[in-house]
Amino acid sequence: MRHTIGGLLALGALATMLPGIAQARPPYQAAFKKQYELKAGGALDKAGCNVCHQGSDKKTRNVYGKDLEKALGKTGASQDEAAAAVKKIETNLSADKKTKYVDLIKADKLPGEEKKEEKK
Image (cartoon, rainbow, N blue to C red):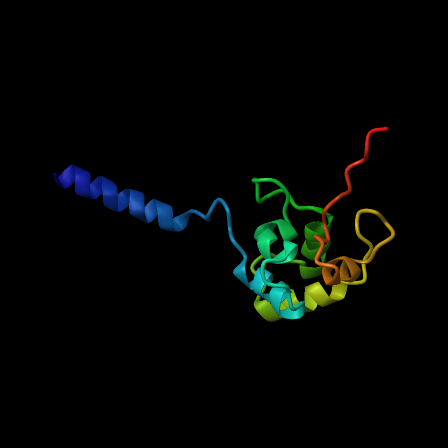
């Protein structure tokens, strides 16, 4: 019993020292939602993490997420820093190199989504 408790304590201590595998950034999402009044139930509201990420691996960022990462310059930014970065990149061009992020966001479209080529 003593070994079990000791093992659990050691495991708990180790778990608190390791960084989270998927480090959620609620301040970033909150800054985005505050900056743009999202339509409840709209594409951006439902997208959640996929505004900046693509797929299930949250280490993979879309073009918007990469631009936001560059504008932030660090991880673990505050909501105010994230808001400034969101504002800073809103006039950047999206993946299509024609449309600004802010225009896509106002149209309730994901700013980092790349258009799929249609087969002819």
